[in-house]
Length: 588
View 1 (cartoon, rainbow, N blue to C red):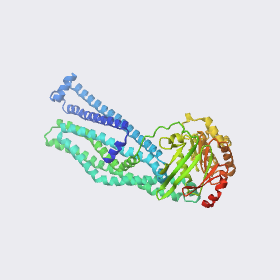
View 2: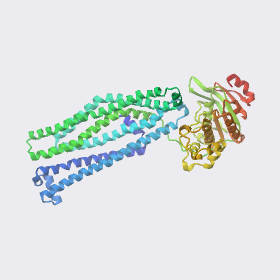
View 3: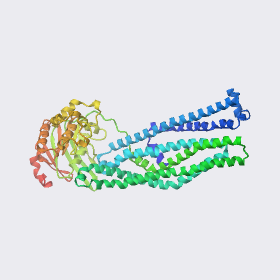
View 4: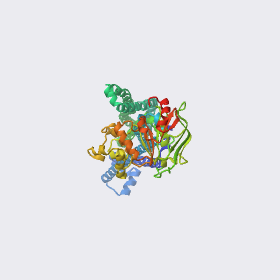
């Protein structure tokens, strides 16, 4: 119950409102269920004894109200009324089932979307410590499991419980002993079986969550390292790691479903035996054949309605117990959720400098990446960042971009502190080209204008950015030009072409500050020279921040900062910092 309460608590207000309306609908459907069952009693009574229309008070009153004096006509009318009640009940149940399924699946979509937004709101440090396969599993699989195994069974339990209680209430009024047999006997047996099975279902559920994550991880890692695995003939062996968790997940799922189905076989035998028991019960009460028919009909119809209800409740409880770990995963991951403010189109004023004062940052407390770093980047200059691997260059860039937050110190742009409020306006001024550009399986245009709706794309800006990145000849050689697909992760392009496409993406929104995080490392010398020559046109008009291992890329830099162990150890023109660079990075 605690997990279900937590799940309801994290629902949006409109989702809780729909849940309340659904509960009211379930209660009304239960009343229709009773009407449908009760409607067969007058009909069966008249079938067994047509003269009951003149002896049984409620039949006499009904006959007078309808004005049907002929026995056959009254019997047909009662049969038609029973049929109408049964059909109406079925239609109400069908409509409510659709409403229930719509609610559960839309709620599952909402949770998945919120979970994805929650991950997008996290800092890059979170992704450095998390496994992407686990995050994808949580968004795609755990929310689906929550819908299939928690939300849907919970609504089934509520629906069937309403119906069962309503039917048992009717039977208690009409035939108390029969109600005790149906409600107490069958219901008690289901409860006993569930109490025996629930611990086993919990263990199977927890194991399924772990095995599901391992399945996702193996598949993702296999595709990620496919080239090397195929080259060394290890693909099948590596992919074989999928077998154990996938087989265990399938076994746990099958075992949980079997556990939920077990009582049905027992109940079917008891239900048929129950008919005999009702006959014996009726004979022991001295009922004649005419009096026996309505009771048998009522037992059969009520059993037809109630036994599936009991079975659905038990099966749904089994699914709930098995899938409840998925609730805990989603609830925990949504902890600390906040509404993201709308992204502003405004740009932060930037005319003077970016100043980092006593900035510290660490991924692990015992190993600081940056320690008390002081750095000033003047507007409209080209700045180089060099140093050995692990010296803090990429972390420094992450702080300037605002995708990392300093653990200590401050970053100011023209004297204004970069914080949660000012960061979006600052990021509107910044372009970023990573070392490894990620391309989606789409067209050239879609990759340059990544994340922008097709009807909002500025095609003139696309062409300008592509030209500046040196992509004109490449695009001209593609079958459909800007509309050509680049394939998954840009497989149809060369490494240099993929990198230049990433540069065009950074230039699309005409940024004032452009950060190149070793972005030219995948380019050949001639292509790199062409790109750097194109960027020369921006010198003095834009602020360029370059991380580069090739010192030739930094020859045009106004100032080069040498980093070592999270500190700036030298600054100046490239020729002036070469001695310091040789000491901290002999490979340079």
